[in-house]
Image 1 (cartoon, rainbow, N blue to C red):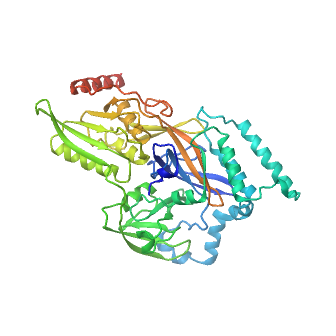
Image 2 (image 1 turned 90 degrees about the vertical axis):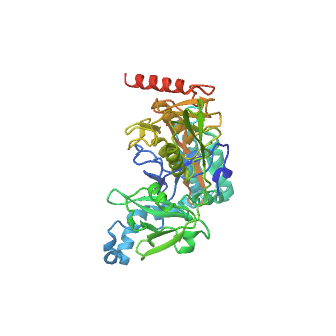
Image 3 (image 1 turned 90 degrees about the horizontal axis):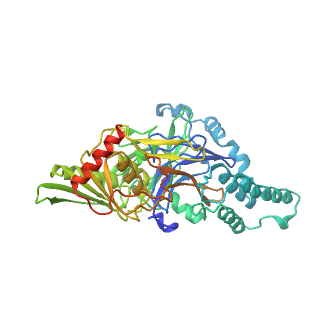
Amino acid sequence: MSLCSLTSPNPCSTTISITIKNGGQPKNYTSNYLQNSLNWPNNPSIGAAIAGAALSFTLLLSPPLSIAADSPLSDQSSLSSDSYCREDEREFGAEMELSAPKLKTNEGIVEEAWEIVNESFLDTGRSRWSPESWLTWEYTLAIKSYRKKEDILSTSIKTRSKAHSVVQKMLASLGDPYTRFLSPEEFSKMARYDITGIGLNLREIPASNGSFKLKVLGLVLDGPAQTAGIRQGDEILSVDGEDVRGKSAFEVSSKLQGPSETFVTVEVKHGNCGPVQSVKVQRQMVARPPVFYRLEKIDNGATSVGYVRLKEFNALARKDIVTAMKRLQDLGASCFVLDLRDNFGGLVQAGIEIAKLFLNEGDTVIYTAGRELSQNAFVAESPPLVTAPVMVLVNHNTASASEIVASALHDNCKAVLVGEKTYGKGLIQSVFELHDGSGVVVTIGKYITPHHLDINGNGIEPDFSNIPRWSDVTKSLSTCNRLIQG
């Protein structure tokens, strides 16, 4: 199921990370769905790319009912006492338990949404938000809360639908088209979106040793994982015998993926102190193959060009791109065309990983910036799969993850851009769950190209409006590299 139908406008692109909120105060932890290593200074982090919506966003959720303590698997039997479990729950959940009753009131839901915006919202320069104006909402809420204590019930928010309406009005006052309210039904669908191929998605929970654990965030109803006995809240310990503790959610999701109808063995731990179980699950990948490729001959057959069209950045995109590039190279391709026209985006992590296939080790893929204005970089960690000249085709519908790939290859002198100015979608949203199961989508950051161009609202200008000769492509890339080298 695509989440694109849940929100508008297009294009689609979604990222996900986890925030644990105790007592209504979000505490943010880096999720590596979208990265190998990225930390926001005092702000929400960018997280795992999971398809959907007309934006890049992260999924931030309230605290789990129970979080297993950090300990080696061999010690589980000696650490499974009731007192240990209660101790563990108090460590992570005491503040939540104290404040949760308040937050479940209609007024509490509105206050919770206000706090999220106050702590996380990024003013991109096109909105009407300011810390001073936002405080007027806090003043109004405080007065209502005081009057409610004095039993002046006429001023209270009497229904949940009214509370949701107040939240919608608050968010609308920001003037940001991407910051919005999600009904419980919409949030539930989002939390159960599957990018693993076995009917579940994962969240990262911080551990006491500074690492994190992987927990099952949501299960597709009657999906393979649920049918096999995996439960929401289970901790993932290993995949096909490989210990995955400490690995990112994106890495483990990739390991769970595979050809449809094949099997994967997942070792899970049920609950805080429950048993460890090895579960064999049959994959049912629903993602469509997004890559089409062919070999073309030009210059009277003297030159072989590998043409690759990428329709969307889904869970199969990177694997399919690798397969296509290797086969085209084996067939003799000496240069490549990567067609990103009308590609609205999708999994931002897939875009970042695909860009790395073309970049030198140490090259910057993209920067992100949040409220603190400091920039954090995604960097290629290994030599490129492809070193031949590349032509990237773009148009006005090339957006989000596609713009990340296009700018990364262009700014690192690996490709020229051909066609039209791109869409200009470079904002990052987070989705926070409220205590009644609804949610708010809040803009928390933006993408900036390696040349420090703010993508959002600007788009990326192509080098050529029409298909150039390959000699012109080579010349342009050579000039680019000379300029970089000084």
